[in-house]
Amino acid sequence: MSTEWTRRQVLAQMGIAAAAIHTLDPHELCCVVPAHAQTADKELFELKKVGDGVYAAIAATRYKVNCNAAVIQTNDGVVIVDSHSKPSAAQALYKEIQGITKQPVKKVINTHFHWDHWQGNQVYAAANPGVEVLASERTRENLTRPDAGVGGVPYIEKQLASLPGEIAKLKDDISKATAPDVKARLESNLQQAEAYLQELKSLKPTLPTRTVSSTTTLQEGGREIQLHVLGRGHTNGDLFIYLPKEKVVATGDALIDWMPFLNDGYPEEWPQTLTALEKLDFTSIIPGHGEVRPKSHLAFSRGYLTDLVAAVKKAAADGATLPEMQKSVSDQLAPKYEQGMSKYPVGQYRDRVPVNVEMVYKKVVKKA
Ligand SMILES: [Zn+2]
Ligand SMILES: [Zn+2]
Image (cartoon, rainbow, N blue to C red; front, side, top):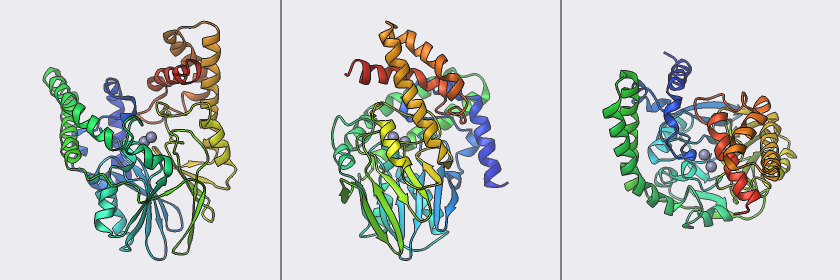
């Protein structure tokens, strides 16, 4: 059974249970995975070549989401972009990388501070003494700020506090479930949640050792790697990793292949930041989540953000209530965006628009 086929089968099965995700935090972007997939850690990531010595590690969907990584080989070591939500995921990818090269990991770059992009840093640091962890200055600050949002050291404590409740709810749901497939999925989720709690308890937060506050070029073992600070978007510290020769950009969650998460974002500035990114000469996007996309995906995502802000402003000016605009904006933008933003069983258009509308309403209209 090939990896490709198994992943497709897993995705198909997850689709059946997509409705079960609604009670969870919007950014958990979580999903359910059939029980048979649980032991398949080797399938956590699928390495896809996007250039000579450049790979996108596309994360399989898990109950506790993992981000994608970019893996960049150089003449004297490896550079990794983002490290997922947990050390075991980073360890799984690291093992796959070692199947390609035995060279040491020299640098880990965190695109932003969200929990699912940096909590695996410790794996690379432990295995590679002297590894540099890079991020923007703002991201470094966010990683220790108590009010930064869904990531950072304080957010580990919040997760530790909330996980026992989440686990109790899963147990309760299991006791009420009658259909064998639903029960099996919930049991798998419970197993993942319990394992995640154990990992979090022993997590060794590994923070950036070097920060950049403006665009910086690294000459890394014969390869040019540019780090672009282009403005606020998904967070106030988004870092874009650009390989000019290979024409590849890794964007973190400033661009993903499903609905964007706006809760820690800047909906009015985000499109401008993407326009600055668009000026770079690239052909492939390694997004924070989902498959590798062509450059045209940038305009599509920016269009959604621009249209969303305009539609919410208009609805508010017309006197609509929040629940009214959650419905009307969702319907209004659907012809252009629903299909393109509902390709996976997670992060789908209709599930996410209400949260996006609420965030734009708060941040842009109410300016809260
Ligand atoms: Zn993410
Ligand atoms: Zn994020």
